Every structure is written in C-alpha cells, then in structure tokens.
Image (cartoon, rainbow, N blue to C red):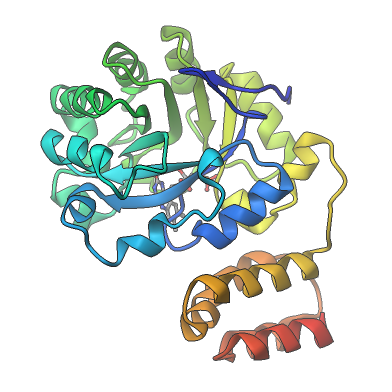
Length: 312
Ligand SMILES: Cc1cc2nc3c(=O)[nH]c(=O)nc-3n(C[C@H](O)[C@H](O)[C@H](O)COP(=O)(O)O)c2cc1C
C-alpha cells in the first residue's frame, strides 16, 4: 500500500497506518511500543464521557500517555451531547488535541445504554454529539461501523453527517454490529463512504498482513488503514508496511512490553493482564506449548521476564 501522511485540521501524521482503540490491550505500554515502531497515530480505548466529567479514578490509567500525546487520540463514548462536550472540555483531556467519538462498540452493556454502535440507529443524535464536541475546540474524529444488521450500509450517510458536523476524519470498521469482529469487511460500503466526503477516511477490519492492507486500500480507495488485532498478533506488521527493518526481535518486544507495563500499573495487574497477549504473540510459533502454559500461570512480571529470557 502507498504510505503517505494524513492531513487533518492542520495536523499531519507521519503515515497512514493507525493503531485501533482496543479495550484491554491498547494501553500506554502497547501504544508506546507501536509508536516506537513507527505507527502514524494511536487511540486510547473507549473511555466513558460521563466518567471523565465525574472524574472517575479508573480513567487515569486509560488516559495516561507519557510523552506520546502528539501521537495519541483519546476515544470517548456516551449518548448525551452535553456530557460528550463536557468531557472534551475537561482538564483530563487537556493534553489531547484529538478526540475520537465511538459509534461502533457492539457490547450489549454499552449498546443498551444508547452508546457506541447504538448511535448508528439515530443519526440526529449522532449529529448533535459531533456538533457539540466540535464546539469544544478539539479536533473531532468519529469511528463507525457499516451498520447494525447484515445488509445495512449507513457508512456514507454517517460519513457525510460527520463531515458536515465538523469532524475532521472518520474511521470505518467495515462490519455491522451483529458481526462483532468476524467476517470479511464490507469494502463497497467503505468505498462509497470514501467517495462521499472530502475528509480523510481510514478503513479498518481484518487487516493481518501487508496483502490485506493493500487489498483494503485498493478496494476502498481509503486514505489510510487502522490495524487492530493484526497489530497485536504481529506488532512488526507496521514495519513491514513502512518497508522498515524490525528494530528488535519478538522476544525483545515482549520483554519491553512487560517492563513497560510494570512501570505504569501494579506488578500483579501487569502480569495477569499480560496473559491476554500470549495467544496473539505465540500464534503460529511451534514448540512453545509448555512455555505458554508457564506464562499463563505466572503471577509476577519477574517470572514472565525470566521465562521469556530463558525459554524463547
Ligand atoms: C477486544 C477488543 C476490544 C475493542 N475495543 C474497542 C474500543 O475500545 N473502541 C473501538 O472503537 N473499537 C474497539 N474494538 C474494535 C477495533 O478497534 C476494530 O474496529 C476491530 O477489532 C476490527 O478490526 P480487526 O478486524 O483488524 O481486528 C475492539 C475490538 C476488540 C477485539
């Protein structure tokens, strides 16, 4: 795929390969490592707008971005324009220039509250959320899906609404809510949406290889791509796309990941939550069954580091 910077609202990214918001995975540690590998822009996982306004303590870890604020957008979710704007204007979001609005989360708890992908049912509400957030003076971006049910295609309608309401960039996850995270992305829906607006369109869904990335751009004409599970399964995909040498081995990447995690959270959390990454990191690697079992049972980071160092 052709690598180019993305211009939006006076900002320019180094390239057009972004890291998706992925709850439970893309915290500061993972984002920072991907930034070091060269990713163009990263996103925090979805953070509740109301939680930000009411200074929910749990949010500080989600928002923490070290020295990476220039390459990190914060993603917020909610259904009330008032709280969405207040969150944009909050002290907590002061270091972020870019705020992304989540209109894609399929999780029932969020959906039932009228948040995330439920906003795809009500374009007028979605529009007033974007307009209110824009008034905050932040650069506003929007992440949508192509609809709720199979056969839906609301991407162009929402892309136009987002542009007309003042959003600066839109990301389209080419799947409907019902599909969650499986199935081929709807390339046509993304292509139609891309043709209907002049703000940059970033395409997302099912990009695990350089071929997937090239296909996504060729089939949709999108300005850039957003990697999600593909970046966890192979963090060096970004290097392959940029045509760069890998600066370290997978083992070194994992060691750095664990070390960075324990700097920003308790040792227990850093080790226990690292377990989620193990199936991704070791996918397709032979002869690591025993190591994986040991890593999955490790309860402190020192044990994980030692296991990786000696056995991988
Ligand atoms: C575990 C998990 C958590 C996710 N959390 C978020 C989130 O916080 N915000 C968001 O907009 N999308 C979230 N997503 C969706 C991804 O950003 C992305 O749109 C989706 O995984 C499709 O891309 P992929 O097929 O390349 O993985 C999540 C996906 C997964 C699998």
